[in-house]
Image (cartoon, rainbow, N blue to C red; front, top):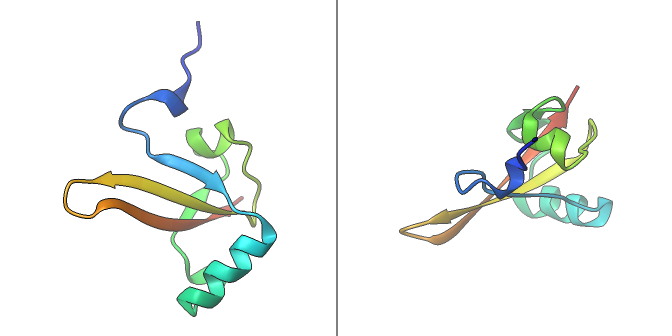
Length: 77
């Protein structure tokens, strides 16, 4: 039986941003997409959410100090 990696308590929420959302994030952060941290397309979570190269993922982690911490990653081949 295969386990759902997305339901594991140590795996933060991963969301694929729409093209509009991705453009807004890049503009707000004043960076080029290539300057974002990277995640490989064959990463288990990227595979589970069917991310494609060029997608930007929003990763939301629970934080004891900040409540939640949001980061972004660019999906690479």
